[in-house]
Image 1 (cartoon, rainbow, N blue to C red):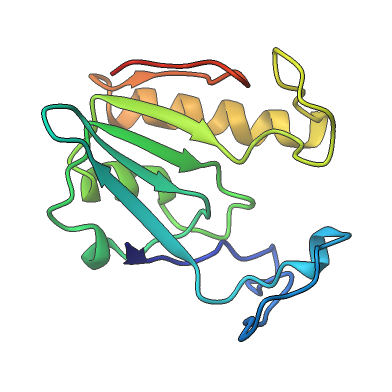
Image 2 (image 1 turned 90 degrees about the vertical axis):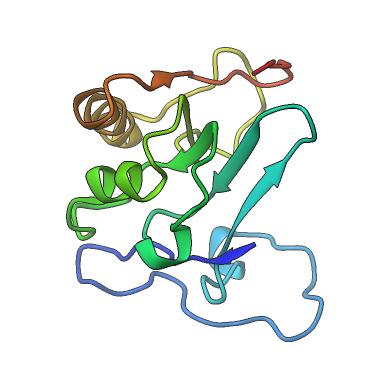
Length: 152
């Protein structure tokens, strides 16, 4: 686990600031999920790949130094408030072999394949994929589908 940062909105603020210090009730709406204490995770499989998962879209490069995952699951930036997000992220992760965009689908709808992308999220997703391909051309971009197993 490494400390991570959640993206900021266009006003450079967190949409739902706060920290949970006890088990909360089941969330009913997105604002029930405060954005404090954000973490990223890397799983190393013996004899297999290392997989990095970052569900929020801001970073502190020092926290990622030396991880160099084979697979990086990264969130698309919520706004343009995160300067040079993709170039900084790819460099910090040492240009992973595979990049899987995450947190671009509408998680408040039923799971269907292909996953639904709201028009408001389509540009963010396309921008993320284009930026990864531009700054890390050797990385393969894998668009995930629900209930699908992938081997790396």
